[in-house]
Amino acid sequence: LVTPMHPNGDIHWEDLDKLVDFHIENGTHGIVAVGTTGESATLDPEEHCQTIGHIIKRVNGRIPVIAGTGGNSTREAIELTAEAHKLGADACLLVVPYYNKPTQEGLYQHFKAIAEAVPSMNQMLYNVPGRTACDMLNETVLRLADIPNIVGIKDATGNIPRGAELIEALDGRLAVYSGDDATDRERRPKGNVPAVEAAVAGNREETERLNELLMPLNRKLFLEANPIPVKWALHHMGMIGEGIRLPLTVLSEKFHGEVEDALKASGVL
Image 1: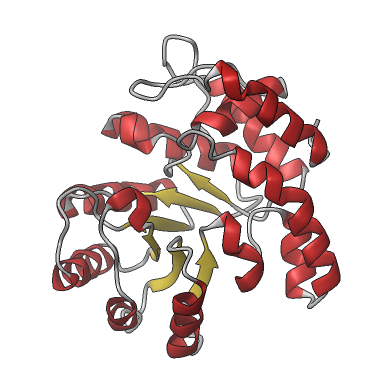
Image 2 (image 1 turned 135 degrees about the horizontal axis):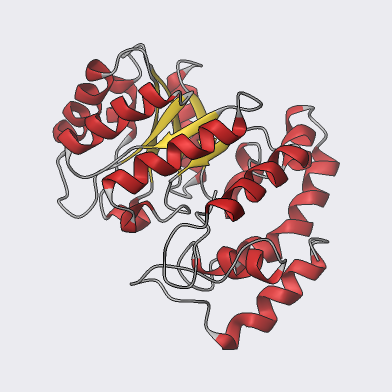
């Protein structure tokens, strides 16, 4: 979920409420609050927790809320995860620590420490080496799968053979979600509810049709760094304002036509 903002960068709470309601009314199965798309990197700790709490209150138990509580400081990640648990989040999403490039043992100890510090919170790992410059290897994930409250992983490596190997090796111990739009179809698509339901039902023809419909939009939503294009798209749809926080900026004008065309082609506009 994006975090709507006023032109000055303050959080737009009314637009956030409307966005939550829009998702629920349109059949979204769950919301990730303050992940990368929610501009977690530019929210201070108080805003981070306030936004998670606000979304949980608005959702009011209608669908699960997964709180983004990762960080490159283990202590900070523990504090955010503990607070999200107190606020009533159903689970947390923990990104691989970025910038400081821990070893595989460091990654194991990082996630183990968070899990042990908040043992009653379901926790999902998030491996996105394209953003973090640190890749959690399958062997480390398999070690972490032995920890009871680590229940899943969002794999955004985009490596299909490696993802298949991970799924086989885990043998059902963790839920594996694809975090890479370009390879979703190969591992049961996520994000778009009809596509997910078609894949789970084993309807490959319908899955491929929906994937082909959405793929151009998926590509255009990464013309610039996420969430720049998706925030512009939502603004163009009349759902939120243009607000976004530096160092991110509003989508470059040269891309407006491409994103608008993709929205129309996918049936969103």
